[in-house]
Image (tube, rainbow, N blue to C red; front, side):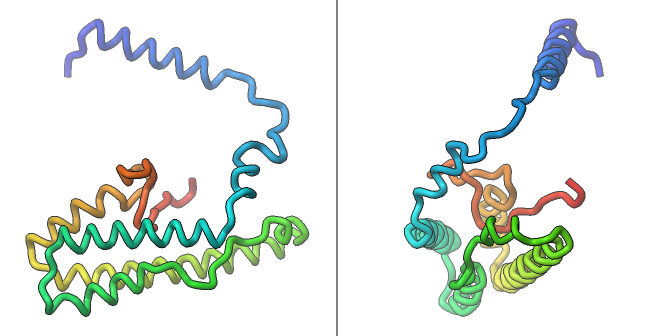
Length: 174
């Protein structure tokens, strides 16, 4: 593959900018309660949960309309949407509680939380596969296109600019 001199110069300039950006000195200490933490503290968890449920319901309704499901597929849709719902009693782990734990206890707690998360993810994956099996070829293609936009961290929900669907895959070891 031949590259023009302009492409090579542009690539070299981008690489140089990357090196300059990487060489910048990081701040000595991150702020303890930065703006992001303050925003998080202002949100009422119940309001946030309600907002998220409404947003997910809207996306699921749009997906259902787009798929044009047959009456025989309603049972599979109901099972799929039920599996996609977050647990009703889920709350974010208490950061202060983690700070009080000794390192081995903190590791054990994090592993338990990971196990719970993986079990929920497995349940969603199986429900998705079962629902997908009930779709006809055209619906499968639509489902593939709709969920590919939201199935990973790089996907975007065009209404909010955020990823969606909740099945975010992370690379092992990163």
